[in-house]
Length: 170
Image (cartoon, rainbow, N blue to C red; front, side, top):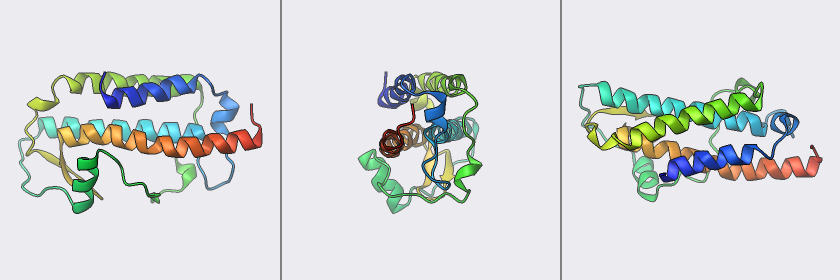
């Protein structure tokens, strides 16, 4: 199991310790619940996996590469440790309807990562999809991005877990 799958698997294991009330708890109006953060991690992973699929199917080669931030982040295999303000409001990401919804999403991501782990090297690295911050990325870079983004949110998850403990939500 590669690092990205280990991280997603950790999210899945950690899910067992939450009640649905804990997953939906918001300490402030403009802060995500743990459940919203899970949904975000799943949605972004699916988006990035979609970019891998696009890279694998296109015949168009892109000569432009990564930005300086993208080069640094991918070299370090780490998302920059800064808060990214999304264009959408925190409530645009829905609270989960159930734990099963989250489990199904995580399993879907694991299945896709497992598939691409076996054949990512066969994709032409010159076929790329643009990332707004990191520049033009090939399939293997988008694959790395799934893990980097998921690990990045483990920091946020720890903060949200503290808020849950402070609130005493069971």
